[in-house]
Image (cartoon, rainbow over the protein chains, first blue to last red):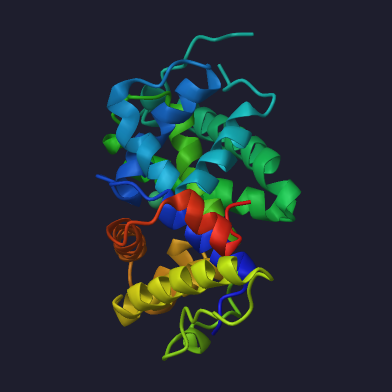
Length: 81
Length: 203
Ligand SMILES: [Zn+2]
């Protein structure tokens, strides 16, 4: 299967953007709730969370899940108190 | 706006039936609303959100002893619901797509022929694509198939399901392939800007 120009474009971009990644998708999932709360509160993401940020940059699937999570949490609802 | 966090763990595990059921109902409602907000626009229906919220609530109750309190319980519960929803959404979307067409010699084939009009740019393009081709040949079959599948828009969890593997393993397979390609280009002494210019990528 010959790569289309668009696929070649994506491949070159993701190859260039590849960095060392010390956690996997499950490792990311374990910290993603905290990460999302910090993002929603516009707080600085602490260095301890660099691993998560780094994985998100390398993993479009986890990034996609984070986007959906942020959408879900930002919906105009407060947790029932 | 009440920002006090309810003691969810106590309520969800309470011996008092009414307290427990009240908390379970409230959590479920919270999850349904979040799922609606994130997924209705992707084309799922109300029933999808209701079903996922129901499954997620059961999982939260099952796994509540694993909740470490590093986030609000409601945020943690929403991560579980969103992951279930995303998995189900992707599984349905790719249910008819087979990986069989992706295996074999043709996987990740590069077409070197079509290129720039200027002969100089064409030489650079050809050289870079030849490098890419040979780096791809050094990848394993599994790495090539998984990378091709990813470029077909297939998420890692779907590739894992279709290859009888797991998400972490597929992620590592593709990530190792990407690292190998990047290392190969770096060792060949190319500058990424030159690569993008020559290949016409990176716009
Ligand atoms: Zn991931």
